[in-house]
Amino acid sequence: MTQAPLKGIRVLDLTNVLAGPFCCHQLAHMGADVIKVETPGTGDLARQLGADPARNADLMGVSFLAQNPGKRSITLNLKSASGKRILKELVHGADALVENFRPGVMARLNLNYEALRKENPRLVYCAISGFGQDGPLAKLPAYDQIVQGMSGVMSITGDGDTAPYRVGYPMADTIGGMTAAFAVAAALANRGDDRGTFIDVSMLEAVIATMGWVVSNHLIAGKAPSPNGNDNFTASPSGTFRTADGVMNIAANKQEQFLALCEIIGKPALAQDPKFVDRKNRLANRPALTTELETAFATASTHDWIEKLTAKGVPAGPVWSVPEALAHPQLADRGLLQNHRIGLEDLQLVGIGAKLDGVAPGVDAPPPTLGAHTNDILSELGYDSAQISTLKKEGAI
Image 1 (cartoon, rainbow, N blue to C red):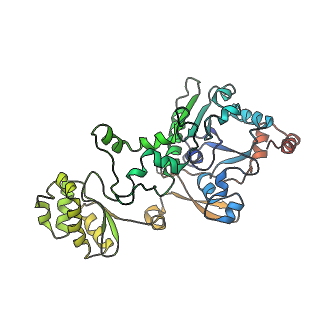
Image 2: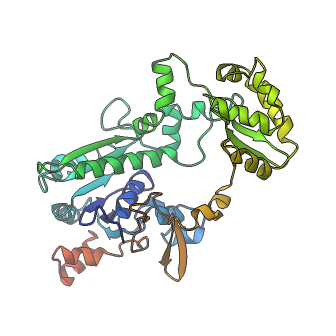
Image 3: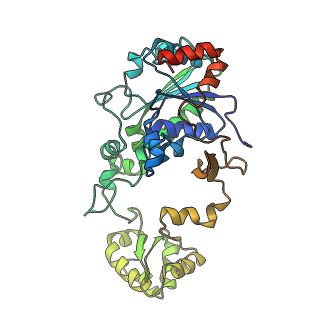
């Protein structure tokens, strides 16, 4: 790896499915040595999730592949005395630990922050949960669908006829994981006083935090958020518009952009119409303006209109499918898609969407099979082959 700002940092990943694994996915791409601690026999539930049943059966589901390249896997039975002992030994040499169990689970195992900081006072311990470690909802399980609904996101997604609508990917899990990764990295950068840190990430709060503008409109301006479909609630014309062969997005948020748009479609008089003369009036008369614009847009293709609009400084773009986005030359040389050899296959997986000094961070190993590194990691801790064999017979690993 050319860029590895977290090189030398060891992270213990005790997480399942998405929020936690996504957090550690970011840390692994930044160079951390991420050891994934999994339940013997089954491992991360994500190993059984994805659109390919054969991979699920092999415990290498697509969901797992997406979030776990570059990590090492050890299986530990954390309910056994030996499993607990090994985790504590791993904690001695770790910089951070990330878990997304329901609040209280790690305390019942006697593996919570209070217990593990005795093993390593400098440990950065990150607990990700649906609602945080305290409060009346703390003990509820965390599911992306539930958090999306309770955060208010679904209430403003869709339009008046379709809301509430779920965002089309697990955005609450992903935002929770990203928030956790940022908090862990920040805590690691602030360990000069040799003290550890307990990080409490609430997926609900993390999602609401990303809605700052919408939330502030309510808190400060007294405007209740509402579903606006594809229309930008701050400006018009800013949204999705029908063309002769499909749809396109336009974001003519500035006055000069609207003036240019009117010229391009051959209707300069629209800019002088009292209903559309300024931002406030265009918002108040959005349906009428949309009708005027789509009448013009019906005369040419999406591609033609985008070329004309962008040439004159009016922000416009297509509405792509995921395959169309991934196939575009814009992504070809950016390093977002990374190749991994998994078994006899060469597969592409998504990186983290950032470059450091012009280089996209990567990892040097594919997602691990369940327990693939158990013997290696135990050997690093000083266990010999006879001891490892005994641990297997005990069901500790």
